[in-house]
Image (cartoon, rainbow, N blue to C red; front, top):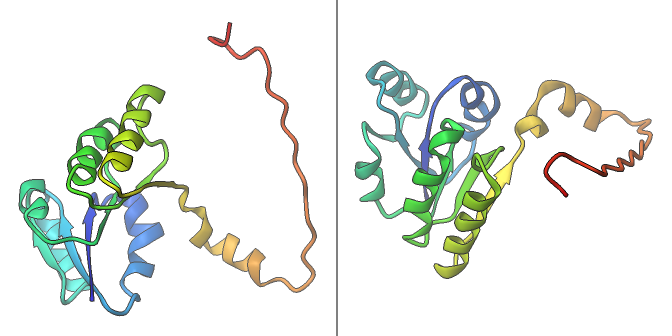
Length: 153
C-alpha cells in the first residue's frame, strides 16, 4: 500500500483533487493541515487517513510521495524538506515565486534521486472530462510566438 502525504486542503484541493484521491485503492493518506475543523472533515472523507496538525509530524512518516496544495509562497520551504529526504513531490503551478528557487528545487530532487512534478489541475475538471468523452473530436493546434518579453534583454 502506498503511503502518500497531502498538504494544503483549500478550495482547489477540495474541488480538483480530493474527490478523485478518495477513490484510489491501496493508498494510505497522511493529511496535514493546521485547521482542526478541516482535519476532522477530511478524516470523515478519508476514513483510513491519518491526520497531522503540522509538517514535522508528516515528515516523520515513511512516505512514498507527497502532494503539496499550499500557497505558492511556501512551496519552496515545503517541497525542499520532502525532496531532501528523497520523497517525490507533486505541486500545483506555479512551482515557486521565481525561476531561481524553482531551479533549486529541481537540483535538490536530482541530488536526492527523486522527482518534482508541477501540475495544472484542469485534467479532472468536469468540462475537460466531457470533452475527452466526445466521439467526434477535432484537433486544434495553437502556436504562440513570444518575443521581446520584459526582462529578456
